Image (tube, rainbow, N blue to C red):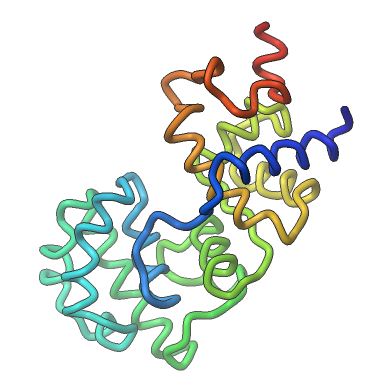
Length: 211
């Protein structure tokens, strides 16, 4: 089986296993997704979803974040971890979007990564989920699965992103990333790969190697 045949097989199997490929963060617009994703660093999506309703009710847009008192933002996001750094970034994001982008969240990786605390993972998520552009979100689940499946070697997020961008069909890449998160949480976990119940077992390099 060629690499192209294997990636297409993996895509099809994950589509069957997880028909609903959606982001687990709750949001109503590009700005909310941007903020929620920044909060999700070293924090579970479930915890972020508990925090953001009150946060967005108090600060609904970039302009309100730009003028937000630091202490108040810190209090609202305290349970997300690293809250002091994140609070500064959220206010900085609000200021830059208000002052540099006329209040509109930019739609390119290059522009998004100029925002405080925003890396390529967050930028790809916004570009893919909000603006419908082909994107490769290289979170820890994605990196782990792509390594175990034998598509990449190594944990460097940028290198993994570039390698997978070459082999993933552009129209499938966004949903593929979401499905790897779902599969990484349910079956192919960081602690253990439950290969005996994995829908990808027949095409997985880890299974073929270990078996």
